[in-house]
Length: 133
Length: 488
Image (cartoon, each protein chain N blue to C red):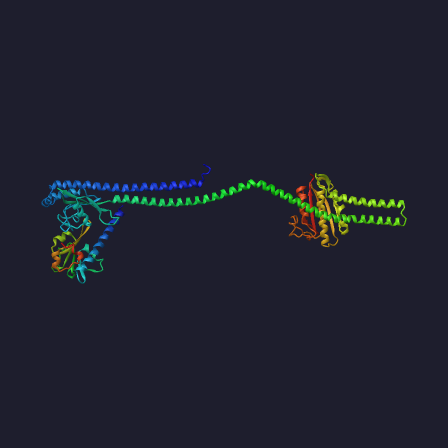
């Protein structure tokens, strides 16, 4: 029984990770022009490092995008780097984050802040417009 | 009625009953399966419906029918109600929460209460939320009717969402959401589906068996028909069999009779030749004596004593001729009953007929008789056989122009068997044909001389009439014919 539960959870997680990676690979190239250099926290790193089109960097100063939920101790230099959060809390508390992707009650949640996107001059494709609040 | 009922019919009936019964059981199973699935699911849904009804009642009571406003103003009440929701959370009921009405564009709902304890998963008050299948959420909200649906279209997905609108004064104020699992229900369904698979395989197997039985039954009925036809034919044949056998026996008797007749005619032909031999000398003597008498009479030299002497001679010759006729007549008389005789008597009578012919052909006759016993048999028939064997030996010796030809007749006794053998030095019978010489119409003689019936008739006489045995073998110089008879 435990074996089946573990298999089920593992499959779910695998599915979730793939889902997230696919989502990032769909969204980010449509917003960012050129090479996408991402500085991220450990949780998101596990997902993003499997990507062939997104590049993970070790220093936030080298990145053109921050993805994660805990960036309280960032360098001043990095604070202007666009931030995409991975939790509702960080999305809500961080006014500079332009969007968020997280799971709530087993459902994927994608959100974009209209004012920040405009401020960053990001142009979202039509299929993502419905997630702009 | 019962006799006409074939075994194949019983098999057919059993096969049909089996198939009907199987389909009947399968139908009952299908109905039961549906009923179990529906009842099991309904019981889950009914339970959830009762739980959500209770939650709705409590929420309404605690918020005085103004849910959003009361909860926004009273954080303690939110905590208490969330604690209340938490009590219902189990492995089966993963998330229980309450959301407010949808946003204006119907794309989001906001959380009012969340029974989740885990801080990472717990949603905040007024947190916006985009559910999957949002159109169903909007429907539940608008239609004020509880509904449930599977979260994804994946048939293996065990997670469902139950939506219960909280309606106050005819207006939907919030939705109670329960994310629940039908894992046990799915397991029951899976077990039933496995059972259904088993049933389907069993039905397929039974159908195959059914068709095999039908096939065998068809073959069996065909065979039965053939058997019936054959039985009919045999019955009809049996009915006429006795008559047929009688007819065939009659025909055979007729044939044998004809053969006997044919053989007798042939023998008579031979006999005439033999009579001619026998008669030649006495006739010549009579002729010579009468010519002498005639001459003496013309010369007036025939006195009474000479006339008596010569007429006595003629008388003697005529008597001899008459005896010859009697011998031949006896030969052709049919034996109506067995009579006491011996080989010596039989041989003596036969030699009276053929002796002159043997002498004329300069064939040595060797006689060696050591069986003097008398026995009961048909003497004339044995004589005919012996004459035939001696005549055959004579013919072959003449035909092959054998130097120093001989015919040896011997008799002897062996245990209770009385044996008569006719040997010759004609070189014997070819081994390739020796088995065929007793077959009717088989002859080694030229067509002119042989009918091919002599040996066949001889064998029939010895074996069928006299219950003896006639056999042939090759000796050193020629053929050996052996007649074996017994005392009775």
